[in-house]
Length: 457
Image (tube, rainbow, N blue to C red; front, side, top):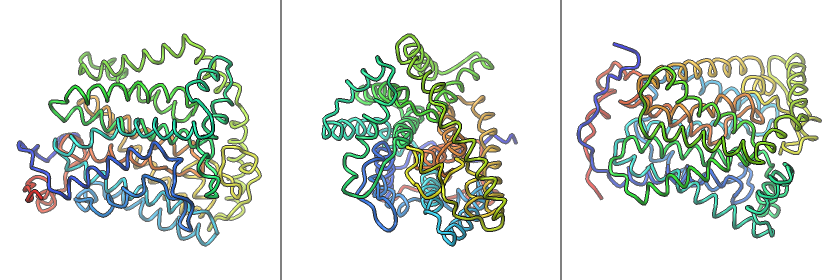
């Protein structure tokens, strides 16, 4: 049997959702939607900053089902990350490193729970999950506009002035930085402008959930259709205007997916083709307007960060040479001089492999490298599956956020949007529609193949 053929049969009947399953699905929706307001928090605590999305995240961790079945299907990469995470947290805590590893472990643990839910999700669940994208855009627009007006800023006017005057700082610091920190000063929290990439990704990733849901759910309804396409237009415009390079690189790679597939196969679903055409139209509009000049200056004129990245790599290698076995906490002149680094106590190589090596030694770095290799192995298999089934475009686009972030984000960690991108990828690919093989044991397959509807409460 081919690797991309599923050994799980697709149920012909959609079971009625019980109360637990409904609450779980809506908790996932709210968690995804609140990712787009990542600058908003309940304040700083000894456990870190409490963000809005973390409340529904707790319900997801409590209510998620079928995690052991998913573990049986992706055992190697899951256990690799568990061992990596435990080692990283233990040694970095001993070295007095800020809790990067702990936050990432919680987010990826939540992603695993979401993936297990998606693996077994059918039309009734996806009918709820499809609202993640429109709600995330709605939440962003409402809270961003509210906080901007609290400091006397009109976002539309500021975007327009920044574009027409080719002023990146007006968008990055006058708009994003002031809005992100309008509520945080009294909480002792500083949200850097780098947060804008994660915030906008917090809209795009939920939109990918909604896009995939549209391939499953029949009878979309006019109201949802309007909300969906308007949300894509807003999210797409904000990707361009965010001036977040890693985010824009990820979106550009995702746009290339249908282009590559069209060059190999001559047929495509109408919705996929329309989405690709809309993305190209938005890009063309940006090119023929002053936005192109703004983006070009961001890529070519703002070179200080490039230099700092090379210096950070050199510092990372030097630090590893000084303490290769257990790593160390390294004071960071580079970090303290960077306006986009919220932590002045350590420098970061912005690398998923090097940063754990610096903070927790070579063994931790080797486990991180193994995790990266296994992830790329799954991504390559995902490409093969996508060329046979274009519905897999959306989880493939979602998974791209993780590898880009691994080699571009501060402290080399995966934030909540990247983790939720992994959740969509592994959840769909481990479902009957994906390519990850079901376990050999019939007892492991039974709970999903023969889902018996529980009493509706």
